[in-house]
Length: 268
Image (cartoon, rainbow, N blue to C red; front, side, top):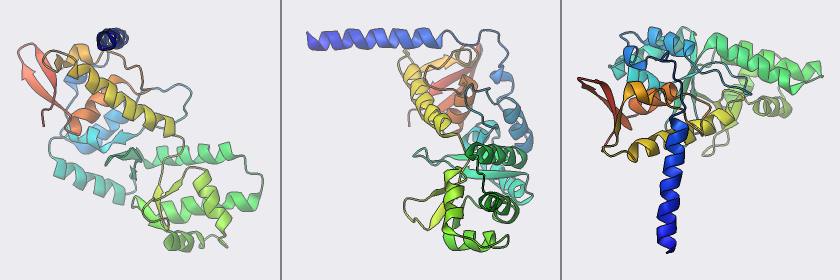
């Protein structure tokens, strides 16, 4: 009897989730099928930046996942080469995300600096000597250290180009969400995008929700056009964002059919 009740509850939940998914964007403006792939990495980045969803209650500048680029530009080696060049040109920055996977976010430098400025403003630091560290960080660290991480000694060395560095300065940078200590080596910090914690939680939940939805379908597949119009319950990011991500990471694949592009759960 308990097993029967459990199955009944499971079916009801599946119906409820599908109902929520069916209430998605019905205006047909996403058109992912017509702009899924690009021949140029920078064009793909600019397009996805423009298409970044407007997220209520979270002030964040647009970012793109590296997996999304892999879904959009066929040559992954070329993508990595282009990203390295754009990073060296200081057009953008890469960030290792703490999602438990090998996720990297890409943010145009101008957008990142806006995000940094917003994070500093939220701290409401009144002591001018303390707030100076953010200028040092922007001028001497961001400008010269292009990697996704930095060790404590190098951080202090670069910050000291602006003035005398104290422990409280590093604490302020961590508190503002600009740095995060590595778990394996506490003397090394990841560069981080401030104020995106809730979005990253939604990213993980949205991935699970979308895969769960497709796995419940008879052939674990659905045409892209109707799928992208559905709405996710547990993620502030839109369906298009998640589809690009999961296709690029290999969890989903696309197949061209006479009726349109089909999205299918990868077997391996």
